[in-house]
Image (cartoon, rainbow, N blue to C red; front, top):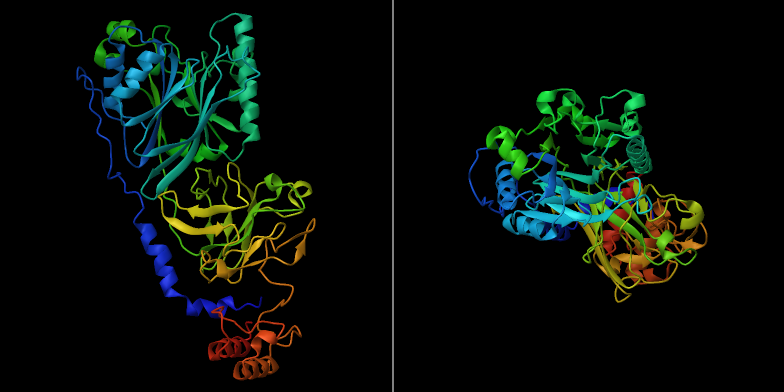
Length: 531
């Protein structure tokens, strides 16, 4: 269609805007959250300083030594957690699921995950949502001593501050002989390869590494991680100081927190420490009743994700024909604001539980088009240029929702299509919004793509939407230009009520009728030379 947007932006449908924007504000999470869950410790024997800050993420690793070590270990651990109150806790050596469930029940402010192989995780549910979790490297049981790393995808949100992080909890092979060394070394190579394969993810690898990071190369079983340019250890500044030893009986520092490249900036502003819990409980008591490892905690502040408006879901290919749905689905987004918008950390979701957090800086400049899809390879996706590949999100061929959401819960834009009841629904043809200023949750605002692209499907991915019947709406004589002849034709068909018989639509404001308003819009864009 012609560049009517510049005219139409002055004629915004304020009713639609108010209906979309202001109700969404009501769902924005506060910081601190209004529904904070109270933490009531099972006992109050010690006064361990709190670490929790609402504008920071606190990530802690803690080996609990064949948990539970004693009859009252659950209550002791409960109090220590209740005092420190970190956002994330990675546990190792969880040997008794019943006792671990008791700990979970005693701390309702946290959500707990138990992998079943000694690794577990707890997250503060006020600010963290568990997106997914799984164990990694199923074919490398020997290397990892059959303690398969626990991977957990998390979304941290407090007000406008938000971050998507991926936790990998590890407990590497212990022991000092050559075989133990080789198994740890091999497991670190596997982890290094994983980080290399996920360069845009905010990965935090933490747990009991069972070795020092400060040893020289020939004696360092963790060398594949230590030497990896894409990995840095948050624990490096304190790893060579016995005061901070995480394993005090040796003493040594073997419990580490490492991060991938996207979190390197956070290392410069973060804070790392070993929490010397035994200073409060007494060393002998701690060692006999709680653990032989001290917890290690890294905290870092989180920048707010700017809350902006102007993003519009402009075209959807939900049912490709030339290629499979799994490879050929895509969503086009445009920006009708006057400011460039970064999609990083925004959420693409539906109402059925599918969700993807955009993990890269994707900038949408005003009046441009960004295509997000399930597959970037043009040989597989129908020859579409995909600007960003999403995962864990699919488009139903029947009914579904495409929701673009700020991490705080504010919905920035949404489309709910309806199996052809009001929205176009043709296999191999995208759904195209007739104009980005229209209400895109109304089926009448959409048409089926009829311009062939790529491997043979129909649509206009990455460019302005238009129909082959009328390449430029308002070009009434379809001569490729805009001039007084087009105005004359439009005025004549309005007066004679015959506009629907003209090949190119004169309904420039898409209100379903042809009238003087369409004439005014066409005249303005011709006079301003911006059609």
